[in-house]
Length: 141
Image (cartoon, rainbow, N blue to C red):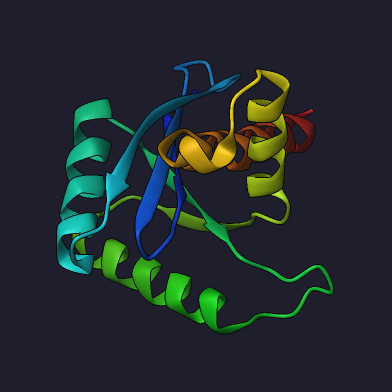
C-alpha cells in the first residue's frame, strides 16, 4: 500500500491528514495557515515529501445538490498549482459534510469548534481521507 495525504483546502487554513502505511486509517498531520497561495503550496509539497506520500486527495467542495460553486473553482485552481510542483497523482474527492462531521466530533468531546479551528480543519481532512481509503478498499475487494 502507499501513504496518501489528504488536503482540506480553505483560503485561510488548510487541514492535512495522512494515511498509515497500510492505507487503513487516516491520521491528522497539521493545519497550514495560509499567508499566500505560493507559501501554502510550498508547505504542502514539503509535508508530502517529508511523509513520503505517493498520492494526494483534495477535498472538493460540492453543494448538497451536486453543483459546483465559486469555492470549487478556487479549490480546482489550488489543485492545479499543487500539480505543477509535484509529480504524484492528485485526486479531487467530494468533501460534503466533512466539516460538519468534525464539528460534531469536537462537540462530543466537550470542545467548542469555534475555538478549535485548526483541529476542525485537520479532522475534516481525516474524514476526507478516511472516506477515500474506505472507497479504495471496496474497489479492491
